[in-house]
Image 1 (cartoon, rainbow, N blue to C red):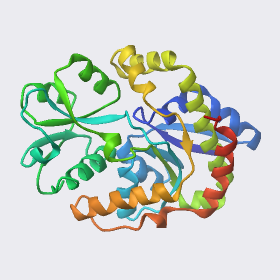
Image 2 (cartoon, one colour; image 1 turned 45 degrees about the horizontal axis):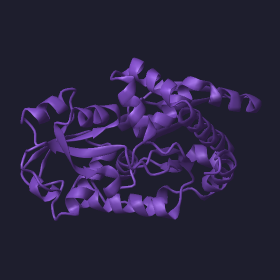
Image 3 (cartoon, rainbow, N blue to C red; image 1 turned 90 degrees about the vertical axis):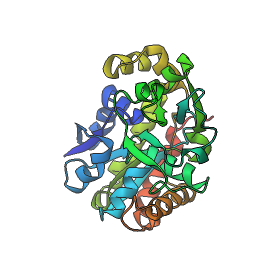
Length: 301
């Protein structure tokens, strides 16, 4: 049997796992093979639903959108919180002093990604609504340039792009993502896969931790790979990768509560078409299979 795994460069754990051969090695004793599919984060849930992939990972928002759309996904594991992963930036000297000053302004962000959760919660904390008080536009290749020349008012940067922008010193941080949300990578599968093959998903989850262990111990090599593959400098990538926790955790009550808060905010703003109950996407059998392998795979900190 072949297990189909979705991967995209913005998910560092899956990105490295797809390059290292660790999952192939782990599946061999089970008589399984893996096929890797390049799937953008916003398409992951649909690719799960139509059977293109059996397992994928994104940030916090896409699984909420998928659940609201009626896709029967279940959570398999999450990353530890990523406090240095992203930030909401404005031009230095722009006169925008706080998130409250963004009312009526234009923000570039990766709409539908974890950045929507981040911006939505940041605005809510200052009495504003993502749905009515700002203009959210999808980030483009020149979003940073648009910020600097005043065509937009704020931009959510992440990874190497964030490192580069801060190094140049022409922006100011309005809000750190990690101060607003836990900002986790989230890994999920279909309910039918979890029902019938929880041990297979547990192997994938364990391999994700092995890939994280490799990246944490080979930051220079990982940064060089990312720069060659995705652009940017190795130095900026190393700074971005060094800020990640490189730790996979079981699904927990705390995570479900984080996601429920996000779902409630995004439903209230109209981003989600209906309210959802996040706990419906938790799978006790999968929790029971994944937790012990993560406990065994994760080094003592």
